[in-house]
Image (cartoon, rainbow over all chains, first blue to last red; front, side, top):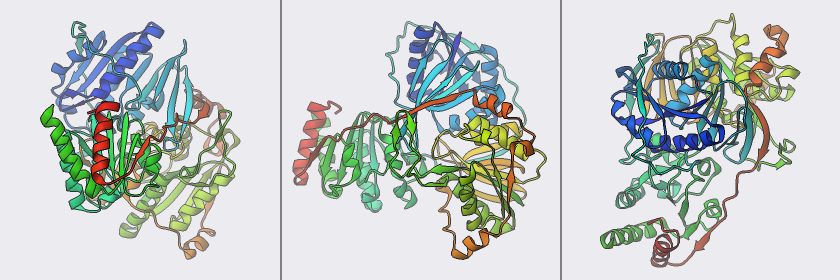
Length: 325
Length: 259
């Protein structure tokens, strides 16, 4: 039996969510006796394939083609299907991204597989898997089972433990040639590219802006805090709707699911639509002048105070700490 | 233009969710039109007002599901199909897509809209699987729609920003609720909706057997429900700004050790 993990990458660099999923696959392989394979799809990604070996992939399957330079679902479905057809895994695991969420339904359909998204626990049952996943805006969890001949699962960010890489582990790299069909859809452009210097779903520290930031002035304050902390900036839906930040920064049920070591919510009230996307953060700090704000119910450290007074002092304190480090 | 919107009726997830003995307690829950589907209806109506179109709703569900269809009709959709059969209760994404494939067989349309996910399952597979079964190009997570030169101009929220794609007709597009704010039906709209055609469709009408649906349902099965592990409220820190920041820095460096 084989478990195949599709790695996600950005500009040729493998994203940390891939290592998390690969670590889980290695864990599952000890329970099931499976062989762990990885796959990397993209353009100019071949050089990065080796690192997947350090995390325990025995073989890394690469499709490195210019057709995969810009994300569009059809070529990714074609490439992923070609690798799965060649490897013949029983279980296929994916991290989660907007691209993967977009192409996985077609892949499930074309392979006649069983598809389950957003898994936060996976157990090998002997003849299939039992998984847990959040649902209803992460207010409930369901347990699902599948013993289908081909099971495709996407994994919820931050749900699994990433193992330390071992550089002495080497994977065999196999390149696959794929013939791509003519596209029926036409890709035009990417508007409003990510403004954040550090990508939100990769960041160890996230500063989140809520309605309490009020305007561009308030946002600038949080950008400065993010800068001194080496953090990524995120926001609630209200702030996206006000036009202050692009939708790529939205955290929550309809936005990104993040799992940083430290989350600092500034002027964030803590509506379920937002907490559905950040409840996995290791340490949650909330700064809000409303002591009744629901975010205080999940915050490890809840600062009852005005962010316009607290954040400038926090910026200075972090600068001081970095200077002495 | 002919636009179909595939809808689902879901429990209102803003309410308190109750689980008992591994089962979801539906008593006391309000059931509503899936918010992502409501955004599809809204967008279809905007396109209808701009270019002229017939907007048809399709829903799989029991008798109560008709309420969600009435809501869409009251917003301004023209007509609706209610697919109902005892064999079709609590369908998963893959089985729902199979049923809808049978529904769309032999029908003409310019595009199909459906929510990017259902608010109850949050699975996000049915739309893309349906387009695969119908051999249609598709795109998910649309945040903007328009029609230009017989192509559908779709803005989709991607990983790096908003991706702009031109889709041929027919295509299938799944929509985000970030696309618009669905209109509240007017009293006039509600009155008019009662006279709009709503056609009942059974499994037999679709030429589909319960076994064919079951085969899809059996690929994966829902065993039980539970509540997520609760996150406890930690320390609430009060005082002036200096005290707050000093206490926080102390906690983050010495206690949580994350700085």
